[in-house]
Image 1 (tube, helix red, strand yellow):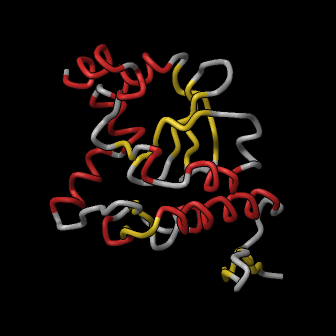
Image 2 (image 1 turned 180 degrees about the vertical axis):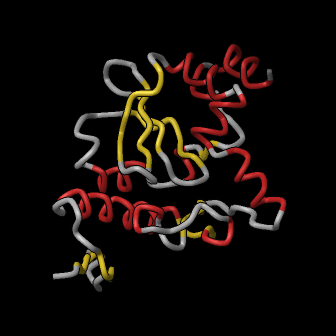
Length: 180
C-alpha cells in the first residue's frame, strides 16, 4: 500500500519491494557488463533479489529476470506496473525473491548489509544443495563476477563433461578444470 502511495506521489521509480535491492546500492552498469553473454541490449536496472538475480526493463518495456541460479535471462512481465503488482503476490515473491528462504535465513541471524547478497557456498549448478547450510552472505560484486563466468564457461562445455575443480586467477578470470 505504501509503495502505491509513494508511486502516485513521486513516480514509478520510487516503487520498491522490501526484498529487492535498489540499483543505487551496487554498481549496476559495471556488474551488468559481466553478463553480456545473456544481456546484449540496453536495459534499465530495476533492482536485484537478495540472491543476486537482476530485474531489468528491456527496450520493449518487458521486464526480464537474469537468474543467477539457472544462468538465464527471461521475460517475466509485460510492463513494469505488472511486474510490481505480481511481486506483491506470495507465490511470485517466493519464486522470484525466494522470500521464505530469505526470511528463514534472517531469523537465524544472517542479516544482509549494504553491498551484500546471499550466495551459495557450492553453486547448485555444480551439485551444491539448496539447504541453508550451503548459503552465506558475501559481496554482490564478487558473486556477480563469479556466477557470470561460471555460467558462461559451463555453457560452453559439451554435455556430460565432468567438472573437477574451479579456480579464480589473480586477474579475476575463472578457470574450470574438467576430467579428461
